[in-house]
Amino acid sequence: MPILDHLNPDIADVTPFEAFHTQWAAHIVIDLNERLPEGFLAMPHTHLGEREIDVRTDKFLDAVKKQELKAIYQPQSPVTANAEFPTEFEVFVDYIERGRHITVGVIEIISPANKARPSERDSFVAKCKNLIAKNVSLILVDICSPPLFNLHNQLLQSLRITCGFMEESRERPLYCTAYRRTSSVEAKPAVNIWTYPLKVRNVLPELPLFVTSDVSIPVNLEATYLEVCKVFRIR
Image 1 (cartoon, rainbow, N blue to C red):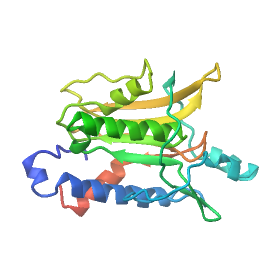
Image 2 (image 1 turned 180 degrees about the vertical axis):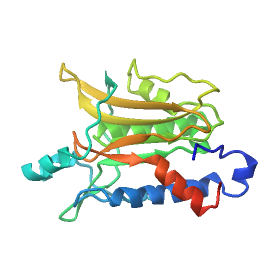
Image 3 (image 1 turned 90 degrees about the vertical axis):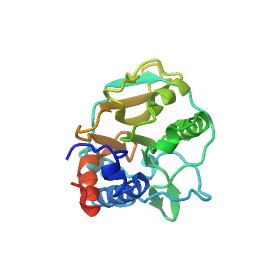
Image 4 (image 1 turned 45 degrees about the horizontal axis):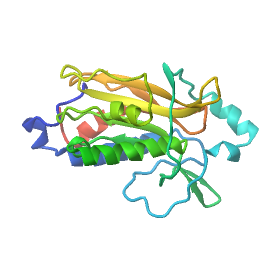
């Protein structure tokens, strides 16, 4: 099924975007937990609470497990760009080791409210910027427009990145993106960037969510989107 126009009254009156958003996040969690290695857990995010900030999970994995993980998924990034990062932020939790919770990845399904006013846009971008700074693998999904505003481009501007931008147009106002912090050949902070400009009736892409610094699990947005459409009887 292609992407639907979730602001069309024929769909919005049956299923508000907030309800669809919540159910979609739950289906993504179910799908990921069927494929994540032992020790990793996907959870729907409702409240951050008090959580410990730490580095990515690589240091907890022995050599055997890392070799097994490397066979799962290793996509090639089309863009690697130098970037600047802030130093502090509260993070999500996806990895559990002896009761210790450490974030490895976050998926954000953007709502119209995230783009409605400059203050909301700035807050959302600041959150994303700090997640990347903490080595958290980040995915953004924007399938709802208007308002016509590209948070991906604002995020890159905030990181002082000069490439990887998407053209902002009414023909392709939607998008999915993925980010992974890495290092450039000069050993400077950098970001791998995956971008997929979209429009209504396009098929959603598969995106990488990194569970270690160099190993990712594919996030099948299209399959989970279809499941939610079935739940709400949207055809």
